[in-house]
Length: 260
Length: 276
Image (cartoon, rainbow over all chains, first blue to last red; front, side, top):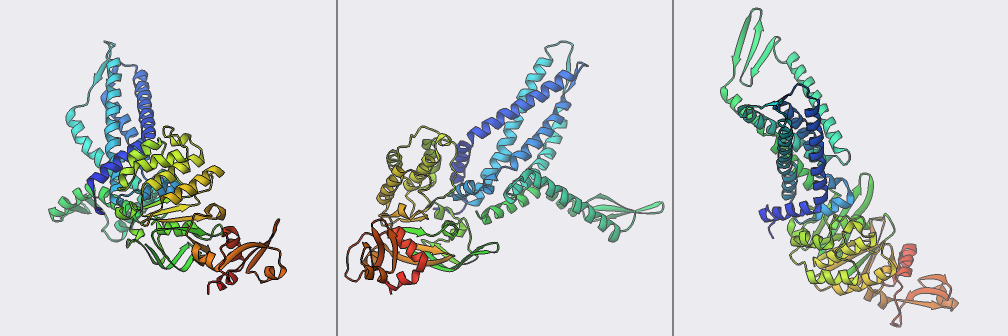
């Protein structure tokens, strides 16, 4: 018996998770499709000008993507907040890493794929009906702009998803709300800490350019201090990519140590 | 098979176990008896790796439950008092869960389901509590894990089902398996268990095999005043006085588990004196 990570066991776990929750997932998918249809239909029907901006629909896309995606992530490990479900889930002969990856697979990969597919199907249907009227026109967003926006949205989304997954392991009840509160609390502490540093440690009239240079204003002069460029080269990707693995690692240890 | 050494466990400030020691072997059905809240379920969840000892050690076939490794989990099945089953049919339950248990036997599962008279095509959500429990028991038994832990398994079962339960459990045991049944419904385990372990306030009050008990103690109805006075335990009954006394003549009497349990809870030193 392999006690380390096993792809075949992960696949069995993914299959089991699907069939255990097939009804819930199907209903969630239908609810999501219904909500998107209502919102996009409403958006189309209140427009009286006959000029429709595709960009508007992406505002709807992002708002619902984050709201529903984070709610979904916050119930990933909700079984652990219930004694009966928790015993059932922890008893499955699989490693904590396989269980974590199975949760991540549904919360991020499956959710994103399904949401994107549903959104674009409904969007195209709505556009089709809009364009049935010859007086209407749709202004499309350039694919270049989309290509630039997608990775940024995904970095942000995946980090937040990992955070809400961690919240679902930590908080036994109201995981979504408690994680939101934790984010605001930590955010506030960070702002106060940054303010404290700026007032006490850093010189007055300082402006940060990026991770490798900052300016200090002295009367009409501004001195630019440059740090080695590798700091920027390391810091920027780290800020982008580090959150998800760090938060998922924390969730992994929490699952491993979870007692029911 | 199971070795518990100097187990200490507490829920926040409430101490449950304070240096508990216990050794359990394969090939037996153990009855873990005790009042509500004495730590029976806690002990089972420590053995199954759902709770971790504060100190001391538990090993199950050389593995540490706390690690919850797949090799351990596939050899242990727990029928918890509060249990969950997904809203699928028993056939689907087997299809997607049996793969995790290498010794799972489909024919056995069907047989147990038949014995319990459970319809295989109904979704579990539409079954009664007792039926759900019987599905879980059938699945747990068919997994053929080395260790089967059952926490109050007869709760919610009707009289016929309790009788079926005893029959099924007795037939499922072999020399490689160990079954631990925790209950406060002592009568339900009569004629089923091989060894009785009684826990009270986190300590083992009594731990003997049925064979030893029937060798050392006799259970009978008596009208003899002197015999009643000398008994280790006695209680009034409609038929006379039910007594437990030392089995000095090697008489073969029928074990009354409930009376034994009450005798131990009331004054265990008297009962223990028969075993010294």
